[in-house]
Length: 125
Length: 363
Image (cartoon, rainbow over all chains, first blue to last red):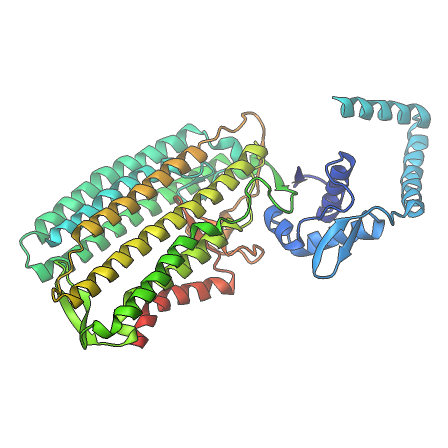
């Protein structure tokens, strides 16, 4: 179970890290109730600032993936996952996708279907 | 007699020669080598260049030292040897600096840092089940022995003479005495306690220090990190035990001698055994480190971990405010050093220097 943060990735570091942790959850490597590493030790092994890890954990907590605790390590806890806020976020992103399709003459449906199938194939490899 | 000191040159000489080949492949003469380039042929040339230069030059230094020191008197020999050793270390340092500069220049010429894709890799486990807990039991026997020595010392305390020897020369004859007191009688035991506290603290600190995983072959790299920590804990535990047994033997012998009249310490065989055992264990540990450091990196990938040069001053001193670890692996050679950016590091140095002086306050 490794986190990988690429320097040439355009996303902010803390967003990258949060996304990586979500990836681990998607792969089933992290389950509800499991503790996350302490902020200091994760910052140390990744060689990033403590504030970066704090921002990542905060983002994950806000979006409902983890629960942060006082004087203890954060734990995976998706019971308070905010589905509505999540759907709103994706709706906004897809709106942008829609604009770009219309601006460049791409078919939204076809593109989505093709990309979705590609991803499915990558998963099963 | 004092010429036996020259024997210490032997392990130093060979360890020095072997070091560039034993240590981690990502560090060459204190310069961080990005992972795709660790098998660069010129690095191989540099490492062997060092080994050959040092082999020849230091043999010369040792030879001259021998020739100069041998005709001197006993007392002068001891000083002469210290000077000789200092010169030897300075020559080694000179070669290190020379090859450090060459390696750094080559790295810049090859533009390695521009040619890699940096990725920060970290394992995500909170606890490493594989490494288990720190083997506290390794250090328990030595504490038990120390307690027994204390007990025995207290029981024979009344029988000891009013003036007792507190220092012995190389022949085992006492050359300094003190008034009998808790401090003077138990001097050796206090020193041993200090050593144990330090070894235990260092072993624990190293064991719990954060791992640094490579970008390529991350699984194997993580395993190597865990194995190195386990090896260090065991090595320190072993040396700790050997030291306590040795010092305990000296303690028992010196007090036994005092009670039964003979004050000369027959420490010879014990000392030789101790030195052999300790050097043997270190040699074993070095061989293990060589094996652990000898992984193969996949060719072709341009991935590498973040460059470490910025944290290593002169390639030797680690200074990283963002790293909360106290102990980190050495950049040059095999072993561990401290993070000077942490205030605790300076406290550690102060304690290491002061702790051996503590028994003097009890005398």
